[in-house]
Amino acid sequence: MLSNTPSLKRASLRDQALAVLREGMVSGELAPGEIYSVTALANQLGVSASPVREAMLTLVNQGLMEPIRNRGFRVLPIDDSDRREIFELRVLLEIPAMEKLAGNDAITAEYAKHAAVAAEIVDAARDGDLIDYLDADRRFHMGLLAHTTNERLLELVDGLRDQTRLFGLKELSDRGTLTASAEEHLPILDAIVAGDAEKTRTLMLRHLEHIKGDWGDAPLPPA
Image 1 (tube, one colour):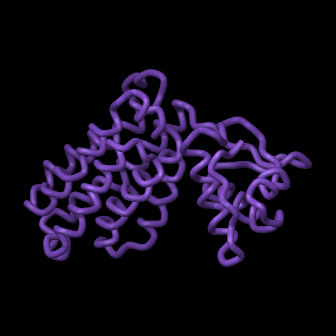
Image 2 (cartoon, rainbow, N blue to C red):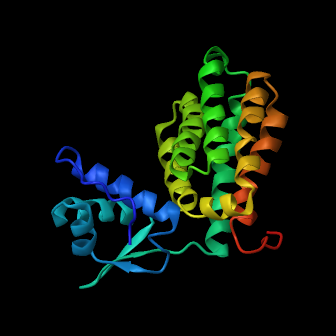
Image 3 (cartoon, rainbow, N blue to C red):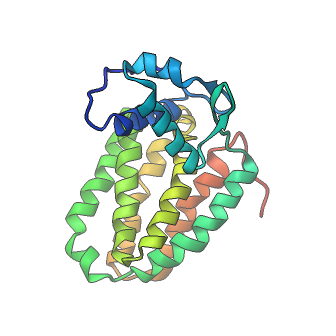
């Protein structure tokens, strides 16, 4: 069920269980549509059922699982319709926010930090390390959006990212297109620092298109 199941230490058991479950989703070991028992997963992780149940309820709140009475929790699949809806929401939320960040002095001052994270994304993609990719990708995008100082925006975007980024990375990696996606991050940062809002919009839109097409079995028809 889960190949990478180190014994979890007592501190932050819920968070550790959550990290392992998310890793299982990224790798495909926790497959969309399948139902998983809290007890079985807890036994694999060497912990009591409580932190695992709490972790799975967190995934329910993030729209990634649903409880199945007397059986466990089902990993919710993401279909083409879901991808399109999430794509449209992220376009509405993220792109205007990123456009407004063009020329942001704080981002310019922190260019080296953001560029280093962009490099981490590329390194992880080339190594096929999906977990490091997911972590660096989140830090890059959320790190830039944090400069909007809009906490509600951050919460909404982070939730939408959760519903797509946990699924599809393996497919991109298997197809050999994950590195190409990773290499899109630095040009986005450069456009923001250059104060070019139009280019920022164009690059972000192309980047978000991966949700709508590249992660599915086939490109979606025009919306």
